[in-house]
Structures are given as C-alpha cells and as structure tokens.
Image 1 (spheres, rainbow, N blue to C red):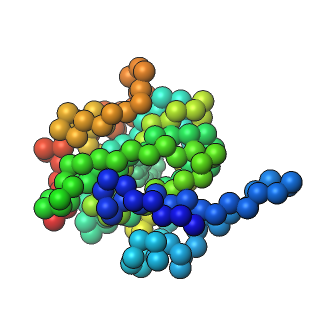
Image 2 (cartoon, helix red, strand yellow):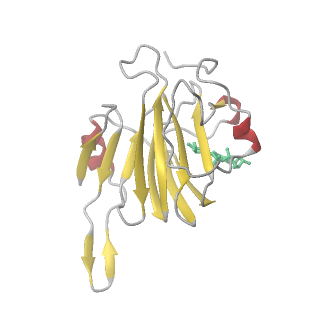
Length: 182
Ligand SMILES: Cc1cn([C@H]2C[C@H](O)[C@@H](COP(=O)(O)OP(=O)(O)O[C@H]3O[C@@H](C)C(=O)[C@@H](O)[C@H]3O)O2)c(=O)[nH]c1=O
C-alpha cells in the first residue's frame, strides 16, 4: 500500500497493492491496521455507502456538523470521478483550500478525507459508482451543504458544461455563510 500526500497534509491518497493474474485482480480495499498506520491515528468506520451517478452529475459539497462529523474513505469501483475535499476547519493553515483527485476503477486510488472537510465529486465517465466508508452515522439533522461553485473556494472542476445537481444541493450555502469546524 502506497500513501501519497496531498497539498492538504491531513488528506491522503491511498494506493492499495493490487495482485493481478490471469483470472483478474485482487486487492485489500480496506485493512484497519494499515489504514491507521497510514494516517497516524485510529479511525473507526461505522457505515459503508454506495452511490451510482451518471456523467456530469455533481454531488456536494457535503459535511455533517459536530457532533456528527464524518471522516470518509472514498473510492470509485466503476468509472471515474473527480473527488474533492475542502478544508472548513477554522484556524487550519489550509482553511478554505481544496484538493481534487481523480478516482477510478482503473487507478483504484482511495481518498481519505478527515472530519472537518466538505466533500463532493463530479462523474467523468458515462456512469460511476462511489463506495465510501464513514466514521459516523448518517444524521440528517446535522447535514450541511456548501455550493459547489462557491467563488471563495473556486474549485477548478473538470467540466465542459454545467453539472447535474440535486435540488437539495442547489440550496447549498456560500462558504462564508457555512458553519465551520473549530
Ligand atoms: C448520505 C445518506 C443519504 N441517505 C438517504 C437520504 C436521501 O433520501 C437519499 C439521497 O441522499 P443525498 O441526496 O444526500 O445523497 P448524496 O448527495 O449522494 O450525499 C452524499 O454526497 C457525498 C458527496 C457525500 O460526501 C456523502 O457524505 C453524502 O452527503 O439517501 C441515507 O439514508 N443515508 C446516508 O448516509
């Protein structure tokens, strides 16, 4: 397993070791011990999520407010997405910074997004299936959404036309208005 730093030190790219043979491939998509070593602390995941999206669908930027904050370990098992984490921790040296990583069924990369970040992605392939582990349970009362096109964050989404966004995400607030983490 290979751990790659990103421009935001707490956000890591994890590349599993893939064993290929004439039958296909095998890899450990999650190993608690190695994962904890990779990020330097213990995280307990309590929920696995799976979503499928069509090309041009953009979901985000989502987070749950404390005490329901979620760390997420994200991977793409079919197709390809551009996955983004935004630092919303007040006082962080990388506050309001974002990182974007292509995750695909081919590159098998995973993105670790700790608590204190908003998360979103856009689908680059005809369809894409995203699998992610979360360190806390879904708590609708704690859900929050920042607009994907917020000018203060200025994410460079790889888009050639406006994305397909849910009605809920259209109601996302600006970065300035969003509740931050302390
Ligand atoms: C996120 C979530 C949704 N749901 C339900 C609520 C709703 O009826 C339906 C679809 O929910 P949403 O529209 O919020 O799904 P979606 O827009 O895919 O939300 C997800 O987006 C990505 C970017 C994330 O980071 C996730 O944490 C999550 O917020 O699924 C659950 O039952 N459990 C969950 O954990």
